[in-house]
Length: 184
Image (tube, rainbow, N blue to C red; front, side):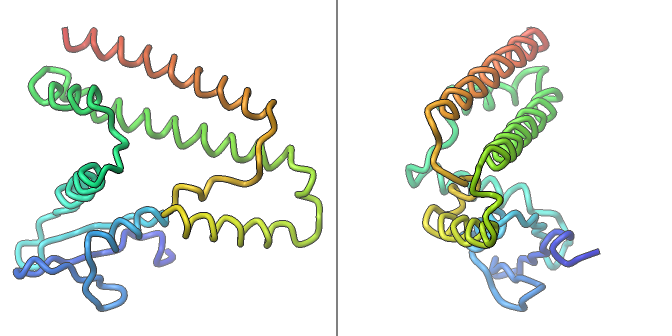
């Protein structure tokens, strides 16, 4: 198994410092956030007890981004999450969220594949290398948010994306209704 297939093991020392076991150096939460944005899974464990602290640190990273104004989670979603801890829906919420994000990632991947398939430049020699450089540049400039971008969109592609987004919104609304029925 390749090293990048395994989660990156981070050990937390008693001093609360975080140690990257692959590079033998200390890392910050921002470094860990960068590993994750680059597609790497991480596992954070307490050196002394062996307790898995990954969830607690990932929540801390999300909280720090949200507090810096990098809001991804709307207030109503946060409110619903808090409510889910006090209802019988608690057992359904993690599965629902995991499936929702999986559907989102799948649709994003399919969209990128479709755009690449329709791109007439894809047959030009050296295009893939140029595209990889462009994606690396965009990833560096946007902190990973632009890594899925491949080419300027046409009006037709914009409309298709809007249709896909509307479809995802409808599916999410249906799932929320089903979830609401479970909590009643």
